[in-house]
Length: 384
Image 1: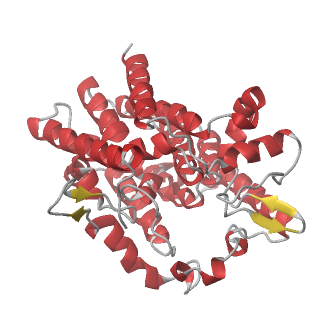
Image 2: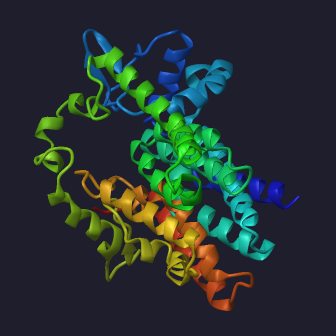
């Protein structure tokens, strides 16, 4: 009953939060339709779909295709008129349930599990991403879906091949999620070390699922562009060479500073006239949008805590090399690539009995994200 109530509540609130908007950036609807017709390219183009790649007479979607793959039954039933925003809302609502199940599986109380699930669903920008459902945002939501399933298996039957496959599927939605593999390397250390035949087998089995999807992605890119690299599609985006964001290449250590600013320092614009505070679509510091996540700093020392921090730091370190910081967005959307590990730390910091402070920070987080959604989705009031 709790699971159903959480899903329905999230679904209703996410649906209302869209304010009747349907994203025009529905690349994955057209790509799903292309897959259903046995094609790797789309046959329709619109001016606002400005990141379609024209190559050898065909139009290709730049992003990893897993969101389109899971949308194929949906598009098969409803056609190209299907709402990508609705699919985002549905999958985002499922993610909130998966977070609850994850925290429960870690043997935390129902109160803590509900608090962490609500913190995720309404106290982070997962709420905003789900309510919009553009291609970039749906990629995050899809990657989270498979990553959460991988973590549920990690704290369940621990079938290493299945964990690897689920992580590989997550990678095929958001490339950078693959670096969360370091969580599993640390957490399953006793299965991999000391080095012997059995442990080498375990290590190989875990990586087999990921390697399969890495090779699949390489093949996918080669069939389209004659290049195996996961970066090859981005280099072909129209006008990318002139984009000031990437003047030092796609990835460069010079970009780290802008990610630090986006993740920790960027604040809304304050004004002396109504509405007084205007969200920035460039980014907003995570402690401002989601203060409840500060409980992650109180996580108890353990192998699990160490594994979570390793995954967070390694993944964010790779993300910080990328030229863009996620614009346009509310909050810092790239943090969703490692959000499940933050939530595990939050649960540890809160413990079995949430305090009044935890509920207070949760309420503040919800109000801030509600404000962002109303300002951007309803009133279209924002700045850079």
